[in-house]
Length: 397
Ligand SMILES: Cc1ncc(COP(=O)(O)O)c(C=O)c1O
Image (cartoon, rainbow, N blue to C red):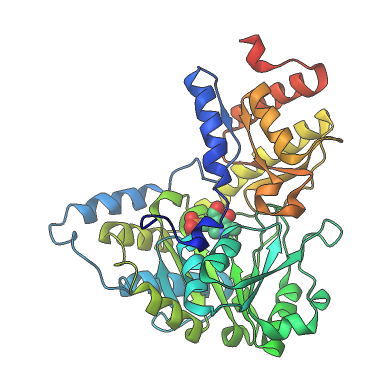
């Protein structure tokens, strides 16, 4: 068929979220009050000056045309300054920063820019699925590295066979981790950089959740490690850090050679972003960042209420020190997808089955903290009623 999709595309499974969302939507249309604790889309807005800059910039008649592929100098400097202030890492805005229309876009395109057929990419299982899908579309080979509860979901480099390491081009890391909530310290990143330098592997650290942290824990950046610039890039985004998921403003930072390849590919794909969004993103990076602490305390309160409620119901979960998710075991004798499905059908609470992130997600669901305390309490009440008393919320209506 002339209009059939490529065989590479046809081998990819459908997007779980769209299928599951369809069912949640059907229930919603029937009048069910669905509580979404599934995707990690922040439910709070960015600070007021960001919104004001968007409209001020949009009101200018000459702000509506194409922008340079490297966006504005202020946007790149914004990221470099943020890294200087937060991690004392010095980055050249012209060599070490590539603007992205969301880090998902950058993750996908980096793989297209770097891989030849059969190059190996090491991806965490469980992990953010774009590392895998981007590799499959690029024609690379996946080597799955299991993340286990025993190892606190940290990648163990010494377990990677040297024959694999030698043929590997890219290795993906993501801490604070989606979906497990696992975190790491600087020593872990030192080991990662050592692995990269010794095996000539590009270490790609996805730092989407580094600004969402609880208590005294400060998530490190991989770029803090000496030698990182020679073997690593970090993907960062305003999506979670600044409540700007819909704005699509992110950056890849670090190794100039890999960033050049990414930039070159992107110059064939997109034409930068809308200037008012770029300007507002600069404001987000420049304004006093103190509000982030208060915002994180809101997530922390939600986390604590959720963890206490789950424990009372008899569901086990570790306490994440950062990120937007609680990784929770499903009750005995249940499979993840079956449990998430029945949970939706019986309580109207939508969570994500762990298997969406890989086979090692079996036995878990991921619960997102992106809903208000009252909604989380309501979700816990419904789950309690169903699991402890066998009452279906939907039958009660
Ligand atoms: C681990 C991880 N990386 C990247 C992204 C994508 O972020 P962005 O909104 O910058 O595309 C997400 C979004 O949920 C994520 O969980």
